[in-house]
Amino acid sequence: MDQQREHILDIRDLRVQYHTDTGLVKAVEGLNLSLARGETLGLVGETGAGKTTTALAIMQLIASPPGRIAGGSIFFEGEDMLAKSEEEKRHIRGGKIAMIFQDPMTSLNPVLSVQEQIAEMIRLHQKVTDKEALEKARDMLGLVGLRPERGPDYPHQFSGGMKQRVVIAIALACSPRLLIADEPTTALDVTIQAQILELMQQLKQHFNTATILISHDLGVVAQLCDSVAIMYAGRILEKADAKSLYANPQHPYTQGLFNSIPDMTKNVTRLNTIAGLPPDPTELPPGCCFAPRCAHASGACSEGSPRMVEYKPGHFVACSRMNGNGGGALGPAEERGQAHG
Image (cartoon, rainbow, N blue to C red; front, side):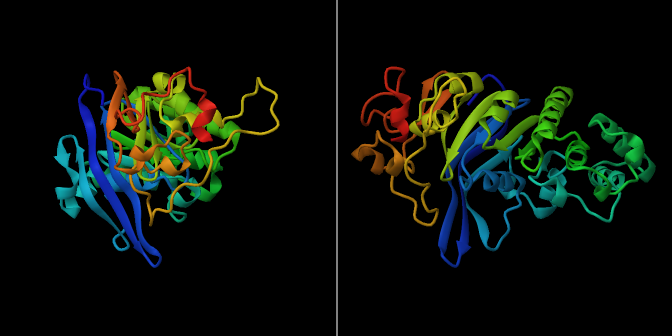
């Protein structure tokens, strides 16, 4: 949605479904998203919003069965990912698109040294000798703040934070153009989280890699991201640059998220919450997926999915109020607390 920079990633009307014993799960439904070169995008939403599924779809790692990409398009560097062969996809994964998964404990092979695991990625995607791959692997360890001489060690000899640094080294070993980080600090304690976030900031500047940071932590997103997309029930409800979205969130769901954050300057006995629960992905409501929980919902909200409207330059909102059905945007005059009932 930034028209000034070339998009490295364009997703249009993406639909991802899973066939389960309880019915058809619509994990991602009509998702639209774009990412500019060098941009860091925060993808924010509750558990089950479809964030990880979106990442796996970009990586072409949706397990089939039970999952499948049911529709839409994913263009990476102008090329249709869905039209590529498995061999072409394998060449892109790790080489041009890399992913940092949630849990570093399960992302590493316990029977291979860490330098061998980094070198393996390098050999897969670059024409180098074994010696050159190992040398670059040790260089990558130094780049992520680990002593290169630790290269021959095995994952069990590292702490959680060190393992995450190794995972980051593997992801960046081939200088990917797009990095997807799925909750990269979830399994780490607060002190180590801060170190990993600082490291990611430094590496972003070093490699100028476009990044999608998947998180439910609005503080982490504010620290790392240029822009933010709010995801709910498989759809993007609001997208803007981080400063604009944090200063003036427009969608009732986004306002509810911000309003539920504890304010350390206020003495309150009860935190604000968003009324209700996210919808069952096997039975999504008609129209706006957030309408059953929204205090501002009108009849128009159930008539069709609201289209994304540019509220201000670069600030997009998918809400019927923006579409001219039921009033204007939720402005400063309206109490944000109403957004969550």
